[in-house]
Image (cartoon, rainbow, N blue to C red):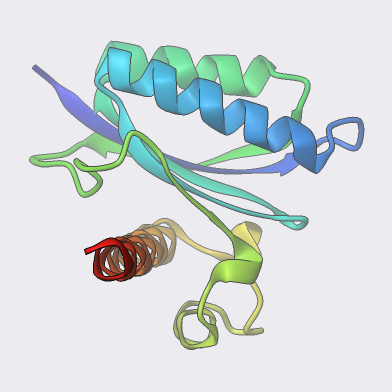
Amino acid sequence: MNIVRLTYASRLSRDCGPDALGKIMAVSRRNNKKLGVTGALCYSPRGFLQILEGPADTVNELYNRIVRDSRHSVVTLLEYGPIPYRDFENWSMAYVRADEIAHALLRKFSTRHVFDPFEMGPVQAHGFLIAVAQERSDFLAKQQNALRQRNG
């Protein structure tokens, strides 16, 4: 099976509020799992940065749907190509809001210390989303451990 990675940036259109984002994520996670797609998404009012990994035909179809989706504007392809392995294999869609990102990560990946996906190149965007997904994974693991300790 030919696995590809696609990275893009876009803006949320003005007629689409933050409530719509929750619906988008719920549907995306459910559908991505069925389709064998993994990835990560970071959002701020400045825009989306997303990586999709999976079968080429499926990723191509998803991206074409995103480009035509009126909730997105200024959709910009940053990277596309075959990959030897998935970086987000445990995530149907890792999701992080920019206000949840550690300042150290923003300093490392952003010249202005703010999340703006349109200021990142493909290598920078890829490294940023890997770091963000790892940070999210560590945070969720700590939460689960705390719950186990309270209930145990």
